[in-house]
Length: 309
Image (cartoon, rainbow, N blue to C red):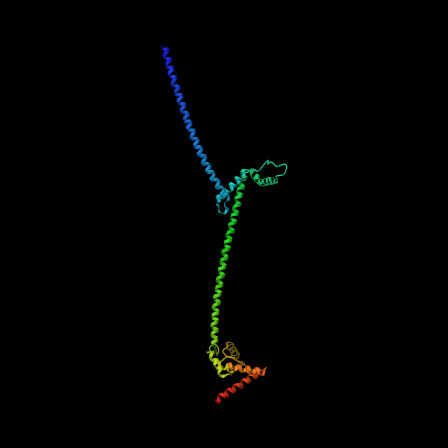
């Protein structure tokens, strides 16, 4: 009887352990599947984010490489030089390119030669050590900075030259306007003095009284024949000043007349000028002395006629 009881207990314990192992196995597979699924989702999301970041960085590097160096700050210039060095290291020179044996593809030969020539410098850069590449990058950055400084100095110089030109132009315009105003004032002052001189002149020196030209013209018309010396003595002027002033008044059309050889001025009216013209036409050539005598005779005849009336 004991043997069947032990055998029954053993069969019960063996069945329970198999079920537990099966349950644990199924649970483990389930958890592993969930973990792998989560890892897959996380990996996919991570790759998407990385691609987006990489794409953004690539666009930024391209914009930085194509940007004007004058608009970049120091950090951007350093990053630009670093990116260019990385780009050069990634490019490998063309090696073992197949060359056509028949020689028909001339364009292909030229392109191959050009590619080899273009990559000669890049091959040298690729063969440099890290320290040498860093040194080359710093040299390139220094060269870009030098070009930036030169371009900035040139721009400042052009701006300074333009400002200097505008200042010089404005100063020249102001000086020209000042000269114009000064010339205008001087002309107005000269005209006033001339107009005053036309209407009167001084006698008896600088402290003498002013004599109106119309009064002087009336004196000439009234006396008809006047001696220059008498006029000079009467008005306190020198002989040359009197002659000059009479000629100026005559040029203005205020009086008409002639000077004879005895220093006299003979005043002529319009009618008398016509008579003198008749005498010249009748006699032909006539001396000034004879003309003065003839005119004196005419004056005496007019005086006699006036007295007889």
